[in-house]
Length: 237
Image 1 (cartoon, rainbow, N blue to C red):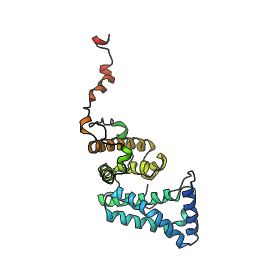
Image 2: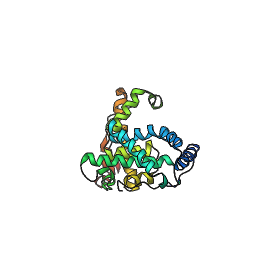
Image 3: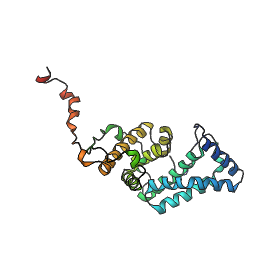
Image 4: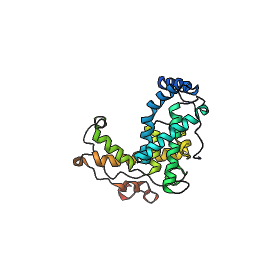
């Protein structure tokens, strides 16, 4: 994946929103600036939120948002209408955010978009903090303080896990779209997404769990499945 290339669009099922946005986008392609302004008003909060969650800094997110819409204006004719316009715009935003991450780290690539087998080979982590949550998760989701805790937990994830979680679970992109956008395999997407979900659950349980219901985990059970433990002992004969 190169920073200067724009994402290719792919076919997705049409909805009322995507059809409406596509109609406005076609008007914008014909030079209707008012239609493009309507699209910016719709997309700006979502683009900014994605950029901020990737970069973690307001100024950087604002810069990426501005760059994204400048790129959209410059390449209106490159969208063929075979996918959601919003998905196309989010890909452009993600590309700009990745470029900024690379510049920030002062190296040509960062681990989040380098395919690796490490995720497949490293055992999945066992939960260390097991407890019931203090309240129903659906009710907690509407609490402003809880939403802030969720954002905090998300920000603490490693970049490569956070990005996959944002694109797949938050933005609703497909596994294939996420893999194409980040330049990794679909297998990497699935494994990184699972790791992101497990790490988020661990962090949120520590924050929102009821300490009186905590269960001490026993990770020794995995030994029962190891080759050295495959033979029955005296009590199993």
